[in-house]
Image (cartoon, rainbow, N blue to C red; front, top):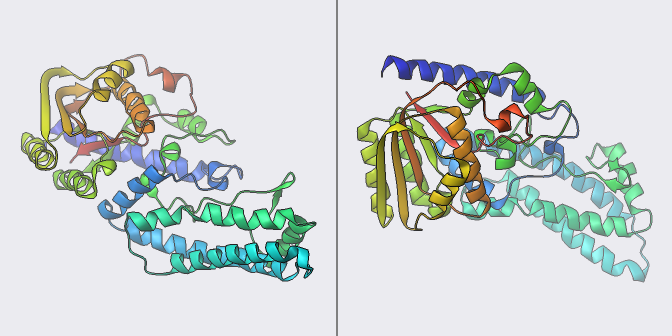
Length: 368
């Protein structure tokens, strides 16, 4: 490894540790954060997490243990609901409500059983994890439709330690299913979370801006990996299917690794286009979007450049985020020899304190 790459790896590790420390200190501290506003894990985010359990050692165990802790909390909530159900009027006109609530509570019970089981880690499993928000909403809808039902549930919750509480006249949303003493997804968290979409006080982006420079923040979003780990990431995505493929920006890959990745891409996709330029990578977000939006479905697009800087990464990330929102899984790979220091002007999204920063969900690698 060259001295410049050693310096980069050390800088990435230091910045990542600093960024993670701020996030751990601030996220959730507001008491009304996104972590408290229901699960933000969408279907495409679950694909990202599924992939993470295969690529990150220990992530599957963290997820399983956290979900089991959640199951215990959900059983406490279920007990409170069952207590309310037992007090429903026995008059005939409430028969339909009792039957509906019974079915919803049975689904709740089955969900808890599932969380505590040694379930298979696959796409079907992760799809099932999305069902809880619907199960909870259906049960509460029946309770809230009954005279005095909401108040009865809140009173029972206060006595049993269940999580139900009021915000205004409505029952507050639950904690994110994937949050238990921190985010169970780790760096595979939902894109909205990874991109620091934050409107709360204390505000995580404001705190990051106070403690980190633009250059540090860019470095903090990289992850250090070996060449074998990066190759494995590419191969796992190809094995799982196109919808799992995420664009990758890599600093410090050897020509041998780039060749191995091209070979892997070529074995799964119809063709691979490679563009090599002895110049820094620099495209505006509009230019990058137009270029990448026109990549044929069965083609991988590889660009190899001498360098890239944080501003260029921001522009690229904005375009890739737009493509992601449009549901496009893109086999795009940018390889550079080095990460250049920032210019005097930082990117406007950072300088203006915009509440979402587009690097968090991007696969940025520094090769050690």
